[in-house]
Image (cartoon, rainbow, N blue to C red; front, side, top):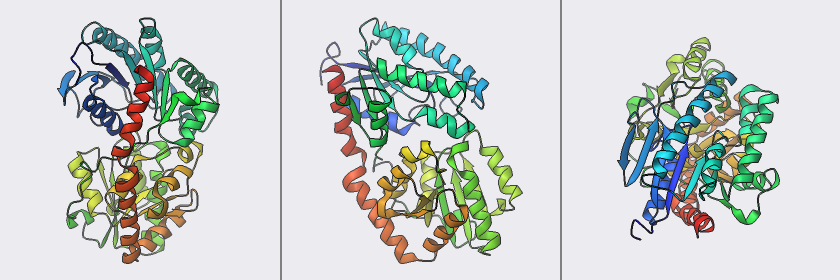
Length: 398
């Protein structure tokens, strides 16, 4: 490893999740440290990660308060303004203490370029880590292309224009960077969010999580508007009330702005006794639920945003040898291939039928689970993506 004076220094800024909870960011940070980079991270505080500063695995983490969890245009404007203020203050502090050669900005949102723009005046490089296509995300959440949608497009355009290098989570995002962002293709690198197998451990199931029933359907992810939890709950209702299957329980792991409303919706559909909402939990609790699940689901709504996005949950299911049911989406099909059954787009009844098809066919579940695990082990795990990240950094810093 190079001496501290010669080490390349990186400042990662992420707003929507804290670290180390944000798995993609944490994997990138630890890979950079392992490769000799000095890494600092700015991220928000949460109840679970409330220390203003700590060092984990030689990574310096600076957390700032956020005060609000945005829901609606006004809420997002407030959240973004508060975050930008603290990001600038902390980035300035880090520049004059630890130092950094490059800012690595992780969206959403796409406005972190405003911070990078200031520090580029001091010779700092800018790498854009494209996690979400925000114009499409805005449309998925609010169902319109209004003034704020145009703001999202402008932020995205300015971000790509300012970026020295961009990394995309898949080929669909790379295409957006080149065509809509007008980036030089040689400056765009695909780095998928492959899971780390040492984190996603296969452990014995815990039958008590099935709540006395024969089968468990597992889900892990954010409880947001575009995640399709309402479709999953309607599928549960169809299974219980139309197909008369009272032998199936649903375990939903994750938190978010829609968690309370989804609990209310489960009550309204009269399926609350068949659904466990855990909220945000530790990796240990998440692994217990997913390892116990007989089938895992990805109910992401079929829209332009989700069709082009790679969902981490899919590869996590595959890493745990779980067969999957999801709507038929481009990047979802690329990731899972034969490890998944594909329901008609936004058809909760077909989603339910596909779930039951798997629950009633143990051999098919085993075959699909083994295929998914093998695909992750031999093609999609983080060990295959790490060299691509380092290649992007070589293009950025030499």
